[in-house]
Image 1 (cartoon, rainbow, N blue to C red):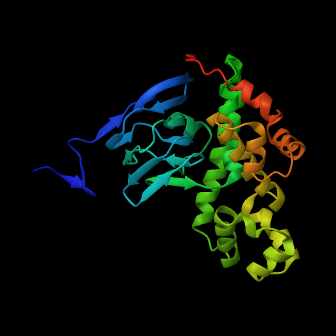
Image 2 (spheres, rainbow, N blue to C red):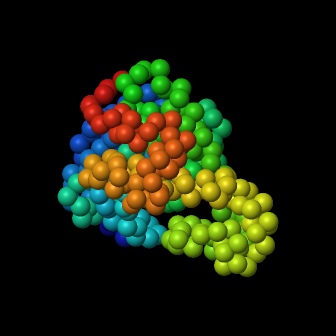
Image 3 (cartoon, rainbow, N blue to C red):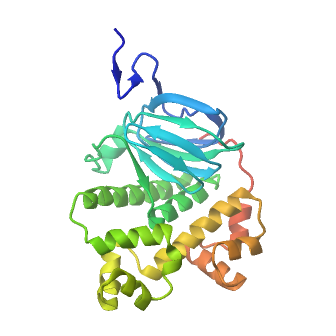
Length: 287
């Protein structure tokens, strides 16, 4: 008798080994406990499968429809997920070109940095622009063909995983209703954030309270949170290579080129053009 869990056949479900994804690798970096791949997904449909190692997955270009044990997710450029050990999922690829950036981490890596309580099941969607900001910096760092950058990469990955760990813990605690509503606004209706007084009125809380409590729940100021969202969107458009810098500037909500360049450089220490040149040539690099 064939035994199934959540409608998934154990007989046919495939477990992918370290560094293995359904596609062609543009780049692969192998360290002792970390494997980083920049991959184009070439299969229009991928049946139920899991991965040998937990990994962080960042969709850079194209769209994917992913199904897991709990839900269906429509993934667009900028979608960031953490898939834990053995997380089962399937994918449908409706795009002509799909590119993903993945970071796999061994059990030894989690033990080394005392992140042993990543014992939840399944996958997590990550919306926080501060976490995506770190992922963009990791992506940029991998485009420097330099063997000594492992330390820099590990620090960035540890930073991101520690933040994710704290967010998982926070998700089980009692969060004020205004914080939940504000999360919805920041991700779906950022145009509401025209001023502190207007946002406070929408949330029905005092502006001083909002200003004081915001960093407690969002790890930065309101201004930097919104600026990071804009810059994160700009990076994805730069990688898409279909828009001029002027078009990207206004598409992301910056009111002029100077404003765009200064904000971009604040977070990435490069101008948008310098960043574009840095990641322009993607070669297959094996360490």
